[in-house]
Amino acid sequence: MPLISDPNLIVGLEKADDAGVYKLSEELAIIQTVDFFTPIVDDPNTFGQIAAANALSDVYAMGGTPITAMNIVCFPVKTLDISVLREILRGGLEKMAEAGVALVGGHSVDDVELKYGLSVTGTVHPRRVVTKAGARAGDKLILTKPLGTGIINTAVKGKVAGEEAASRAAIHMASLNRAASHLMQEVGVSACTDITGFGLLGHACEMIQDSDIGMKIRMSSVPVFPEAIEFARMGMIPGGTYRNKEFRAAMIQASGGLPDHVLDILFDPQTSGGLFIAVSPERAARLLSRLHQNGVVEAAVVGEVVAHPKERIIVEE
Image (cartoon, rainbow, N blue to C red; front, side, top):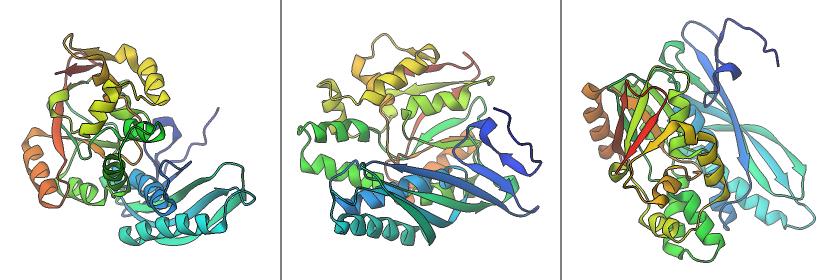
């Protein structure tokens, strides 16, 4: 499909990044993104918060500041009470208020399946855009949220996960990547993406595809919900995990001592996951310290960018 060429389009469809970026002037560019999905938790207000946080995350991953949003709603008016929709929208509005984002409108349709999300517009300086590309050999890799929300949500549906595990996962999914984004811009980083449906390894593969670099991930350093490890061992794996693994299998080189469930966790589809940041070794310690000081306590250095093997990710214990 031929794409329209525009000299002001900094990031478009051809780069498959987290959001599009368009330059308005030498000092200002806008970031645009959209995301919506079906409920992953039972509480409507919590679902609204998670969906909003997830949509806003793409702007944060690009190093931008979200400023406006529009609601996207698919709602089964004949089978669900309107109070459910009211609580979803209230949750989304609460999260937008926390982010300092103005709700300017939206669109709704009658649909048999409930869905909610946002179209978000943000701003960034054209020379301060952070993309998936740009990681350099020697960079440290920092992950800001624990993995395992997809596995925990699967266990919840299977009535295996307890309320405590479900609540902890929901809190992390509803938390904004705002602080992490601001801090990475303050320190200066090479590249960034947010971890969502393709899992950590899937999104990491996007960062090294068609490049001269690879990555090394140390599983022992990766923050993971303890319950997710237990559930993964039990086989409570989302269907998306298997699709992610199959799609990127050729790019992954796993240590022989790793148990099978480890790759399931690393490919686990996340909802509103953390930022995955490549930062120079000289700045990594400062960024990690600043993250911890500002409440991003789960953030950890989980590996590094390597020169060889190119376009491959080595997973170690």
